[in-house]
Image 1: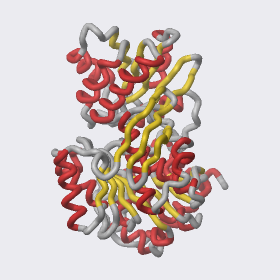
Image 2: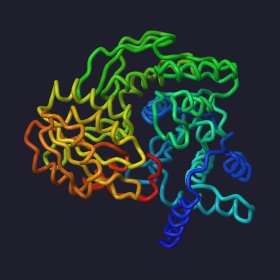
Image 3: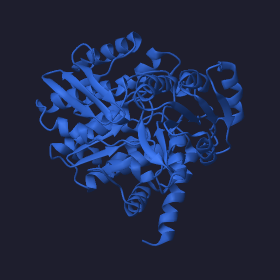
Length: 442
């Protein structure tokens, strides 16, 4: 494939970001019609929520693959490579396919007056079409933001999943939990089962009402199905599942109580779809989902990567650090934080600072990133005598180098605050970037 074709595709995709974020289904519906509705060629599962939907999608993908189905998955954002967004049976879409699909979709929509897709709409169409071309049996779709007007909401799934809802993207989704829940519950389709993790009462009330309106069977964690942790260490969590059947011990390579809820949600979804639990145990045990309490070694140091990008996710990470990592395996946390300025950075800082012995405030190389000096001023307001030191670093790469100066054997470097931050950390630690500038959203 000539390099100029690839560069042309990259430039075209990047240029679509000028159309910003548009919530609505008109564009994607029109594009789908021009492509002969590729999403009707396979069965789908749709997932929305503020936190946990990516992990849940990964678990559902693993269960489907273990059952022998050729399975696609569409998630966002990517951390290092654009090709992370679109996978079939765990394999990322090839750059050559990105080029071919970009050309095919661009040709289909060219000359149509008023059809100016956003980046996310175009990439959603790319996933829809790619899965048909690859003859998948099932595809798992994660919403980009919201649900009701998300480009992925043109699919007609066999089941819908709504993970935990909290405050995020308020400028688009609303300023209360109930308003945000209305957007997330917009993925519920008539007569299609919906499975949800534990929710704030306001959010659950909205979901219940929408499910009733759509005559959709609703399964609620803690009411209709449940899970109870048995043991947990830094390699993962084992839990007992209680739903349509009881499974005495399931293990996931994730830490944190919230991941047990996500796993239970995926298991209950599979139970409803297949009326069986065979294959679930090996599927969950083998899940790989980077950037979610991902523990690795770099330059002789233990490093934990987590994309916590809102206060709820940051609180979950902080609890996991205090109750697991610091209790069982590590003596101290050096925390590198880089966040987006349009997020609740104060809430993220408040949640994470009690877990950090040393806090290094930095910024990924995006225009939306909060400046380290701004974060430092905020952190000083929240600091207590238990905070050993507050520092700034101009880039994530330099923050990692600085953390190495503080690091002592038995310590843990935690890199968090945004998937952008995690992506740049991965790049700094040796992963090859591809279309990094198209990360978008979180």
